[in-house]
Length: 135
Image (cartoon, rainbow, N blue to C red; front, side, top):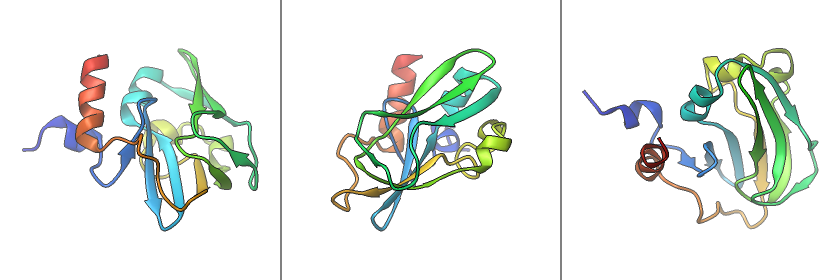
């Protein structure tokens, strides 16, 4: 039986210290929030985007917010680039974040400025250590 970090944090993804996950496919990065973030938020009631497809976003800057029964949190871009897609399904079904945070509830797709993911991203083991230290 593997430890909980393998189950909670897929090893094929990268992570941010802001509890977002990132998957790079070619020159595009798909971003969502982690199971730890979902656990902290509770039942998600609203996902709101402050950007639209085609907008340029900057690493570390907010691209939207996520609201739950407990709190309102900002969503941050892990890299700079252009917004390639937003998950419109979250408008009608914000609960997807609670149901499938690493799959159907992706939030944004970003075309990377230089075609590379940033160095600030953590692997699953480093992210698990970050969560443990924060917890």
